[in-house]
Image: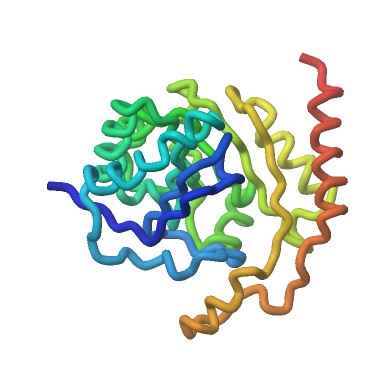
Length: 241
């Protein structure tokens, strides 16, 4: 029987998808994003849940989902690294008619079609829009995330696109122009979000004995981030279809 590695469960999440959500954080991640606020989830921990055990825990919150059009969001870490477990859990949740969102960077182990068959919404983290920038920021290869996006597009999956705005990298119109070119032809996008870089997870690095890559970087000014978001939206408003 397939078992999963669950780091933690948040009962009343309000930002990772529509409505009130149960957010399941799965451990394990191939990327090492310099701004990551969950470094404790990089390592694949011991198996601690069967699909049935996890679903039984989740359905306790089903009444809240119905009232607020909420559901379950799988996050991490990178949930796509536990594809077999994720597939089995999602199948059981679909039997319960529970809305499922997947918060991912799109860097898993394949089986993307099988996963997405039972997912209602993909919250896709756009790390960077060039291969060089992606490699510098995450330590990984951009190709896998593009592969995942291609599958999601083929399957017509609803998307929320997220971009962390890091000072000195994304906080300028030149980058936003490139971002627009990168995402303008992506279909089925319901929402675009800018997340201003913050240091809320930096203390975890010290506790884990890991150097925090951005210890000398200032947090992103929210007002400027909002202005850049409006600049991006204006490009969509003014484009000629």
